[in-house]
Amino acid sequence: MKNIFVLLIISIVVIGCKQAPETTSSKSAVSEKEYLSFEGRDDQFTGGIKMIPITTPKGTFKVWTKRVGNNPTKKVLLLHGGPGMTHELYTCFDGYFPQEGIEYIYYDQLGSYYSDKPDDLDLWTTERFVEEVEQVRLALGLDASNFYLLGQSWGGMLAMEYALKYQDNLKGLVISNMMSSIPEYNLYAQNVLGPKMDPAIYKEIKEIEEAEDFGNPKYGELLFQYYYTEHVLRMPPDEWPEAVMRSLTHANNQVYVHMQGYSEFGITGNATLKDWDVKERLKEIKVPTLVIGAKYDTMDPAHMEWMSKEVGHGRYLYCPNGSHLSQYDDQKTYFNGVIQFITDVDKQTF
Image 1 (cartoon, rainbow, N blue to C red):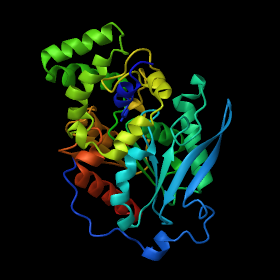
Image 2 (cartoon, rainbow, N blue to C red):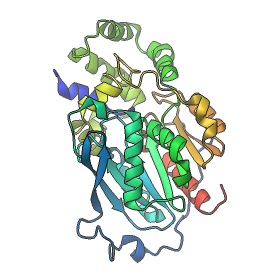
Image 3 (cartoon, rainbow, N blue to C red):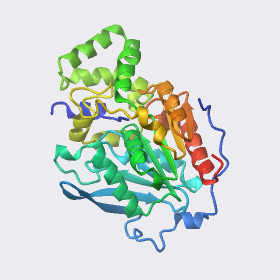
Image 4 (cartoon, rainbow, N blue to C red):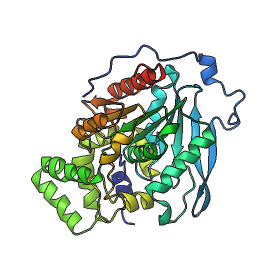
C-alpha cells in the first residue's frame, strides 16, 4: 500500500464529572516489596511477559501480555485502540499506577505487533476478539474479585462487547474515549468536527474520500495537520510522545483498514465496524462503569456523558483539555479520575 507511514499515522486509534481531586494514595494492604516482587510467580523468568495461546476457528495463536506489579484486588487489563495498534499507547500508565499499588497488564491483541499476526481477514471480528479477551482473562487468573477492564477507542468498543457477554467476571469497567454507536460517531465527525475546519481544507478532504482515493498522500497529510493535532492528540507533531509514535510504526494496517477504514475521520469505505451500535443495550451493563470523554475528542463528549447514565452503575469523567488520547493531553485529570474510580470500587464506596 502506498505511503504506508501516512496510513500508519492515520491509524492511530479507534483511538459531567469535573476534574477529580488529587488522590493521596489508593494503596491497600500491598507493600512496596510485595507489589514489586516477582518471587513465586510463573512469569518471573520473563519479567512479567506471557505469550498466551488463543484458540480461534482458524487455529491456535499466541498473544503478548506483560503484568506490572502485584495487587490481589486491583488488576487492570488494558485494551488498546485501533484495531491493530499496540499496548504502547498506554506506556504513560507507568507514571501513575505503580505508586497507587494498582496492578496492570499490557496486552497486544491478536494481529498486533508483539502478538502473532495471522494473515486472515476472517479473524478480525468483534465476536472473536471478545472470546480472545475471555481466554486472556482465564490465563491470567482474573475474576470478579479483582478484574478491571479498561478499553480506549476500539478497545472501548471491545470492552463494551465483553461486558455485555461476560460482565459477571468483572469488578469494574472503564470505557475511555469511545461512543456506543458508530453511526453517531460518523455523524459527529461529518456534521460537527469537519465543518469546524477551514472550508477549503474540509472540501479537499471530502473530495478525496468521495473519490475513494485513500492512498493519496495528501489525504493523510491534511488529516494529520488539521484534524489529528486538534482531536487525536493536542500537541505539535514533533512533541508527540515517543511511545505513541512507536505504536504508529508498529500498527497492523490490514486489521485497521478492514475494520475501521482509512482514517479517524469517521468510518470509511466498507469497514466492518460501520454499523456497530450497542446504545440500546447499555442498560444491560450493571457492573460499576467509568465512562471517559474529552472536550476535543474525535468522539462526542455529550454522547459519552449520556452513556454513563444509561449503564446501571455509572460515572462520567470529563477531560476539559483532552482529546482522543486524553491520557496524554489531559493527563492529570485522566489519571486522577481513573485511580479514584478503581479506589472507590475496591473500597465499595462507588
